[in-house]
Image 1 (cartoon, helix red, strand yellow):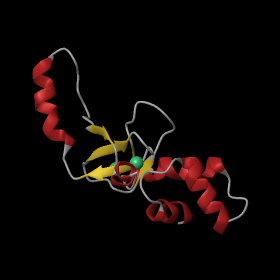
Image 2: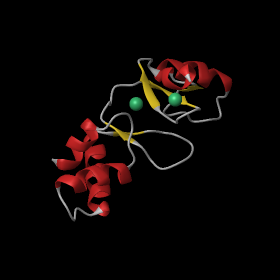
Image 3: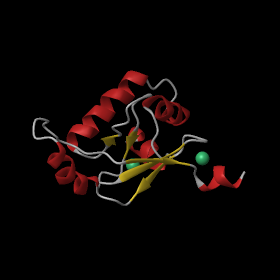
Image 4: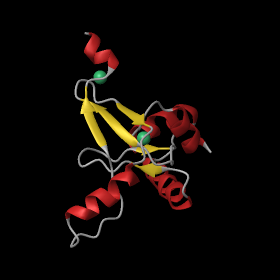
Length: 118
Ligand SMILES: [Zn+2]
Ligand SMILES: [Zn+2]
C-alpha cells in the first residue's frame, strides 16, 4: 500500500499533498484525490489519525496511541510527546459542565533542538 508506506516513512506529520509527492515518485500519475480517499479509509479503520491542529492543512500520522504534540515556532516541526491528553479531560470537564468534551489535544509550543542551537 503505497500511501501507508509513504506515511510510515515520512518524518513527522505530513499533509496529504506531501504524501502525494512521495507516492508519485514511486507511482507516476497517482492522483491526489486517491491519496485523500485512501487516508479517509485508513482513518475509518483506525490505522491513521489526523492532527487536531487549529490552522493549516490537515496532517496525518500512523501513531494512533494517545499522545501530545510539540510544535516548533522556528521551523514548524511537529514532534510527538508521550503524554496521554486524556488525562486532561477530567480537569477540563470540571471547568464547564455545559460543554460536551470529546477529545482533548495537548499542544506545546516552543523551539526545537535544531532551532535553539542557531
Ligand atoms: Zn525548529
Ligand atoms: Zn503525533
